[in-house]
Image 1 (tube, rainbow, N blue to C red):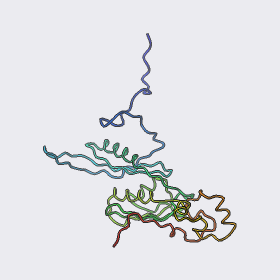
Image 2 (cartoon, rainbow, N blue to C red; image 1 turned 180 degrees about the vertical axis):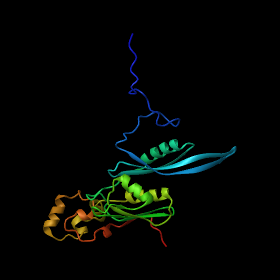
Image 3 (cartoon, one colour; image 1 turned 60 degrees about the horizontal axis):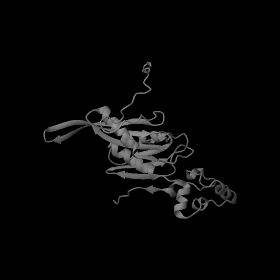
Image 4 (cartoon, one colour; image 1 turned 45 degrees about the horizontal axis):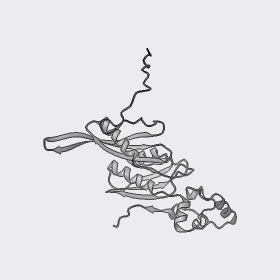
Length: 231
């Protein structure tokens, strides 16, 4: 008669979805990290009365240029956090990180009444931002940047506006392709030696500050405004 297998937990199944769906293995905790942004009490009015619950806002990132924001509701806080983390992983965005561990250019975006403005920073600057903007930038792997909230203080809206800014980021080469120019012509590089060097490393520049011989300040030429408003 065969001996029973040891109970070492290797064959156990982890129900990551509860009653919402099939069972799936847990994600690698070393790759994705979560940061709880906010937990709020919510009420749902039904025919029989009021149902109390919780809403959780979670930021998920890998500190390598990928980040996402999720929101979910449940009757328990732990269930709401799990569902919000799963929702964040469905809305991930990838951003180009420069050698200074920053993003390529200035950007601003709206999310309802929240407005966020981001500006790249030099090495050693750190993340000069507060609230939800700081959390999203750190989870994305940004180490040198400036961030400012210019509207509502709602954490979820500010986090989503920050993700919009990061999603709008593009490299120098991508912007040059959109304009139908070479990187050297777009950034005003006139030195023949520098232009030859840029052509050899075409496609590898993330930020204008990485391009040799580029005029200063180049970041204003790559200004991006997402969902601009009038007035």
